Length: 196
Image (cartoon, rainbow, N blue to C red):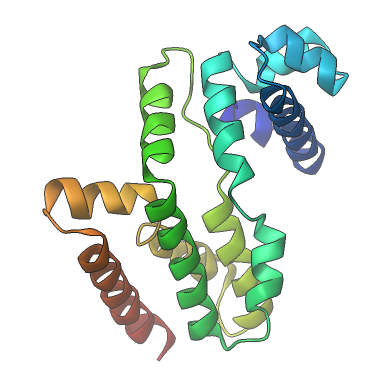
């Protein structure tokens, strides 16, 4: 989805349209149907011009739609961790995304490959990790400035998900369990320095 397009105008409405596109794609994929962006636009009851503002390629859209099936929304994840203290909630979010990566690693890697190899893609993704962290920080870190919350969400996002596992596994040579332990250790040290 175009980052420039999503950042202009009514962001909430654009995210709803994106979700509608993903749900429509999932329905078509469940029918084992070969599909095009035009098919998805028709299913989502949006114009062809609209769908091309969000996705430049059916490959990018299909890869994202498949991964989206297995991923909790930021709102659902926030609800699960809202009763915990700030640090425990951040660790729970990290654990969720790291386990999601392990469970769906090949799909995430394929999606990254499609995005990186698509010359028309600006590499915008759903950004659930950051959104989940920002929801948490907005409600549990009143002592932090808006910029501090933004910085913490950004840096904590680096310690979870497929990109972190690509580095720990492919560059550092760690297995899944060692990767999880290292990323948890990094988060612990980060939170100790920022929240204490």
